[in-house]
Figure 1 (cartoon, each protein chain N blue to C red):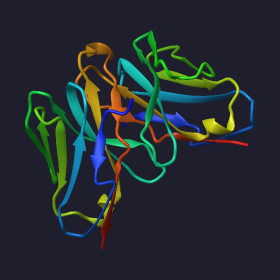
Figure 2: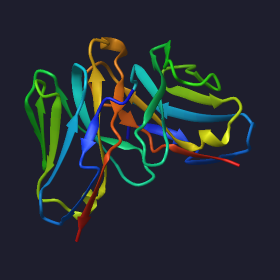
Figure 3: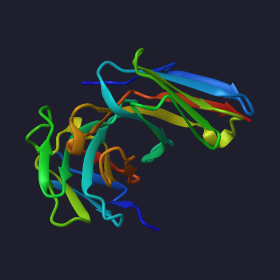
Figure 4: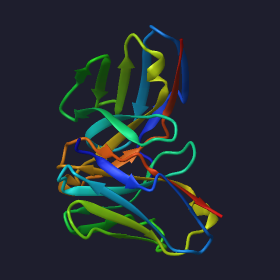
Length: 114
Length: 112
């Protein structure tokens, strides 16, 4: 069953603006991950945040996790046209451990206008 | 560069004709996954291997099988493809628990 639900479904911004994408989930997790997918391609891992972490940064990416609200957000700062892609949140559900597996949301389509 | 490689990128098969998709990884990862992704949908896990241990998802049709002859290679066999099996098939691997996944570029399967 689908675990992550992203919001909004589609986002269109101007180059240079920040993009904020949200994800909510239903059950306890080990970690939450964000992926990017360019049209017709595979997924690229962006960032992983563990259940005991609240915030993580990687370059222009900032991810927050609120386990009490079962939600996460991905912020892309100073967006570029090359950031145009679909973004997926995926949850690794407890307590599967070594056999853990990711469950993906439907994704957010981000368009960055030059 | 170490990566996950899927072949072919595009596969056209006839309705009912068995087809095999292949995946290899040079990362020496323990775990390999096969996901199915239909247009504008979330990737859906079909099955995964932890080393040689095979884990099938409860709702994966019997039509889908998998083989992992060694650490590097994993195959997806579709015994009798139907029109509804047309999708992007994504292979991924990871080293261990609490690591991100490395995905291949996918194989787009068309059933005619």
